[in-house]
Image (cartoon, rainbow, N blue to C red; front, side, top):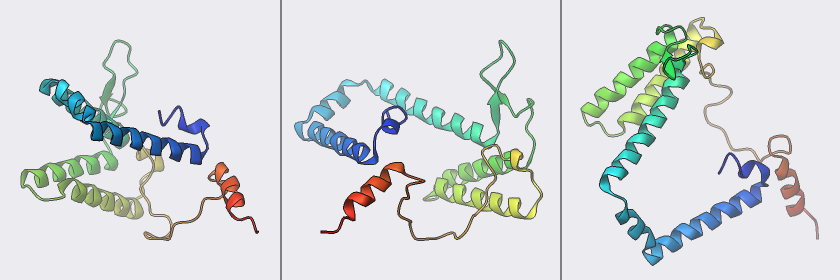
Amino acid sequence: MASQVVPVMTWPQAMGMSVAYGAVICLLVVTGLREMIMNAIPLALKHAITIGIGLFIAIIGFVKAGFVHENPAPGGGPVSLGPAGELQGWPVLIFALTLLLIFALQARNVPGAILIGIVAGTVVAVVLNAVADIPAKAWFSGPPELDGSAVSAPTSPSSETCPSAAGATSATSRSP
């Protein structure tokens, strides 16, 4: 819905739709209908849905890391390892080491293992990209770099970044 409906809406309409969605969910919870629906779904199907979502997120991560690519060979599987059927390069190594770090921290029951692994992998990638001469296209989803400050105050939306913001700011800044 977000990729089909929201792009043709203004941001106030999208926010209104989010509020309406929240109200419907609250109504389902208060009436007990949500719990009845959840109890009607078999446990095996709940597990299958959870596994499916996890695998979908994993394949997105594998593609973004350059670990797998679309397989151009006819009759082959949907993906293949690396761009030429082999794994190579710093980005893939950083991905593999980050994944191993997360697995190791999870095995030791470290609280926040996934977050710690992601932050550590990101720091290593940013530092490696800054000191080594790695071409930008080697980073499959863009080179890791820090532009500007790591912490900054939010900016108000401009008419260039958010076309509907121009109308919103002009409507709220009228003088009496």
